[in-house]
Amino acid sequence: MSGKSNRHAGIYVNSAIIRDLKWMREHIARSDGVHILAANAWSPADLSPSDPGDEFALTDASGQGLGVYLPWLRMGFHCELPSGAPAGTIFFFEALAVCAAIHRARVWRKAGRTVRRLAVLSDNTNTVAIFNSLRATPPYNPILKSAVNVMIECALDVRVEHIPGVQNVVADALSRGKLQLVRELVPDIDLLPLLPPQDALGPAWQPWTRERLIHERAIALGHALDESTKLSYSSALNSYLNFCHIHHFPFEPTPDTLSLFATYMCHHIEPRSVDSYLSGICSELEPFFPSVRSARSTPLVTRTMRGFKRLRSKPVVRKRALTQEDLARVLAFVGSSPTHDDLLFTSILLTGFHALLRLGELVWPDRVELRTVRKLSMRASAKVNDNTYEYTLPAHKADPFFEGNHVLVRRSTSGPDPLTAFRTYLTSRDHLFPLRAELWLRADGRVPTRAWFMQRLRRIFPRDVAGHSMRAGGATSLAAAGVSPATIQALGRWSSDAWLVYIRKHPALLSAMLTDGRSLHDGPNTAGI
Image (tube, rainbow, N blue to C red; front, side, top):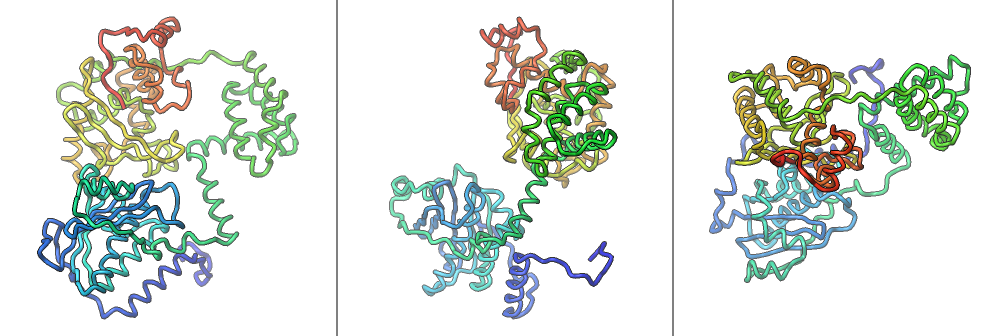
């Protein structure tokens, strides 16, 4: 009730919360009391196939179905993806497979066998996490509740742990329906159909009320744009509304109004920026004026913009691309006894250069309201090998499907080595902050910001170098080494030929690189993503 003017006012509780509270109430009512430390500490390695109270299972899910393998019993269970479950999310089916394995305890109990401890191995880390924490987003709560029902009913102690996918071959083959392969791997196996627990699908997939549909759609529309994009679009809309107000024009975005707005703004700011303003206005006003994009595309508006770009546009001044010599200059500036922040800055710079990353994918925005933990790379995702290092970029502005990206950087022999810099930084970071989750951390424990990075960059380079110089330098280095355009576009995660603006070479040299693949340097760039 915090923040409410009337502390006795009613609050809205959705049906999912009501179902969860009723479920908890029913278990409390049937409970025989609270048991402190009733479970013993154990791991799958402690289980014994000769102990009738122990059992072991491996699970997997694929785009074809679910698979559960009980190696001690030589039994394999498989089924196609159940109807009524959400499509397009393998995480749901991985969790459902683990839940189905736990439900075997009911079958064993009916057959007169009491299993006290069950170890389940899954190659999906998210599934392991939700069963160990019993915390998940609402669509997965029915799976957890279904599993807990069995654990309480059968007095079953469950451990869910991770197994690498390459070691989970039998369960993987079961989930894909490759039964012949399963028989080759385990000749004496019994193959049986798997019946996923229906209560694990939950009522979340039942029809919703119209009010809830509208509510959920409104939430989705509010998150359709990245926060930084939303902020700039809101600024564009405010400029348009202010223009209409001071000129006594109606707010409806007609071709005439948009053309006059463009005329007014082009006399005050760069016409190329006015193009972005018009895009923001269309995005913000489309729910209220569905024809706004048609008005924006009319010849009156497009020709007005074309004319002002000819009349008032200034040449584009792009920042200089970094070179391998610039990177060596940074290492020389840092010296032989760098501080932790020096190591952090150097590693960010080399990673951004070799992996073609945007500065915003490595540091936090300066504005607090634009910061989100969802975009931070985590230490747990970082792996260092002999010749490469890698980590997960969970989300970024150019990731429309929220799939994240896997960043992989190889050792470089033609310039400053990013692997050495990253390994040295990681050693310092783990010594200072062994329990922190974030990958990139300053010496004071804060996540580096754009202002922090630019302040250090300005100590070494003049203002012709900026954050985008890393990405431009990496793309230019790859092109100069004869890397194909398609490869550069894929490495930089560009969806179009927009990456060409990052290449800072003379057009004639660029043409030679892109058509003939001729290298302008002695050796190729050996780093990538």
